[in-house]
Amino acid sequence: KNQTVKSAVEWSHQFLAQVLGPGSLVIDATAGNGRDTLFLAGLVGRSGKVYAFDIQEEAIMKTRKLLDDAGMEKQVCLFHQSHERMDEVIGEKVDAVLFNLGYLPGGDIRIITTAGTTLGALEKAALLLKDYGLLVLVVYWGHPGGPAERDAVEGWAADLSPKEWDVMKISFPNHHLAPFVMIMQKKSGEASIQ
Ligand code: SAM
Image (cartoon, rainbow, N blue to C red):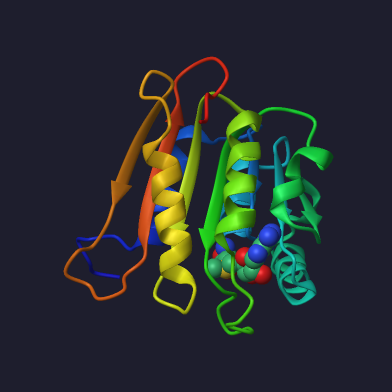
């Protein structure tokens, strides 16, 4: 693709590639069609681990197929459950957590990530991150229900203590309804979330 400006997903991948490598641990909070999960599995390799969540059976099946076809199923644990409960199944700190918010592309557009569960999951993710780990969000918000979640997520990020977090946003102001990316790096110690 001959483009100078990367898409939101490409930016998210670029930042994740900076902190992840063979042996890394990462959470994909929204597996969807599995494209991000596959990308993450490639970065962490056989010695690493991707923990991937989705509430839709269809998403888990598509993601499993993509991983099987690529021979990368061994380094991924798929959970057919809400990401708000990620701390119940992950007992170790991770190098990065990715959320790709919105609906399953090609699926039922009424099944969307929503502010209540997303904020709960972000708090869990913040606590599961290692120091200097990255929390990366790709925020699709152009669908019904999207703006409310977008506002909640941006408010949550803006309230993170600047002593403990750096928060950055990449957006495309001249593209109507375009998704944007938020990158949050935990600087040290426990996250303090008001
Ligand atoms: N990363 C995906 C990819 O590469 O294809 C796209 C993700 S899609 C924008 C958002 C996904 O979040 C949907 O598949 C949806 O089922 C899932 N989702 C919605 N609420 C969820 C929740 N509480 N926990 C986990 N997944 C959820």
